[in-house]
Length: 309
Ligand SMILES: [Ca+2]
Image (cartoon, rainbow, N blue to C red; front, top):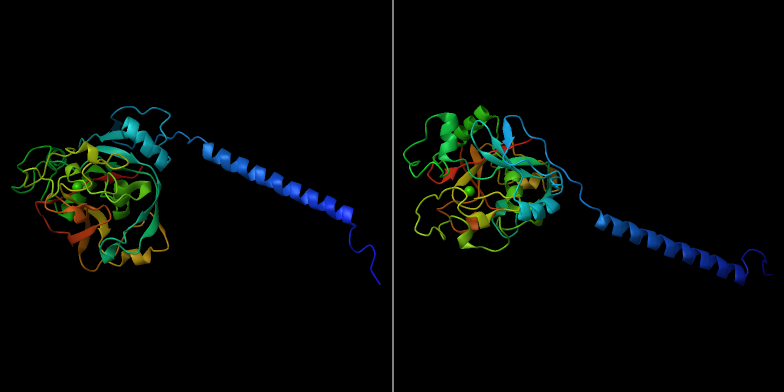
């Protein structure tokens, strides 16, 4: 015997189905509107605060999108980077907005793997390597006979310890390995500071020395600037980073990390980045890792500085 009343009649079914279909359509429209608004939402302006002991090179306009890496990259292409000058040393530092990128490479050496997602807070980094003039302004004397090319060349023959000494005297710091790579590669994970292709004309390497057998004045390749405006990240001199070198460090951060820094190391080696005038294209890749004893001084090793807020 049929149980009359347990199921709605045909007309009630149809009405209920129409209501459900209408609600689905309405929900879809709302979602599309929200996604559209999110895409069109303007990036909020943000100008980072001026660190103590520094001055603006040019006061920034209030509409600078300094809190959004992709918007800032586009803004830098049109306006140049937000730049401050460290009063004691004369070093210019540029702004690097916080964000995330894929650190490491599957196309390089084993110590560049695994590729992993790294998130960083915003920070300032030297626009160029530290020069002989800037070194002299803080340390009085220059190092060794290899710093004879000119005041605007990168200072060389600097050990990691001597770079640290410079930083402690100035209130600055060596960039972490992650900060260095992020400043070179940016949110697009570029292979080289300028893009994903090798260009011998955009940095001072063994392939593009144009007759030079040593360094060139910093900033000689403005078209080789990175996404945030950093110069000479590829080539000229290798640059010390704050981290100890550990070939397996990326294994410990493979699930992702925020502001990672390697604080352990039994080998006595510190990280070097960027390649030099002595190196070829592969060593100038922004993900390439190099290392050496922290006491080593060499005529293709210098450094650049960084500063958190
Ligand atoms: Ca360099």
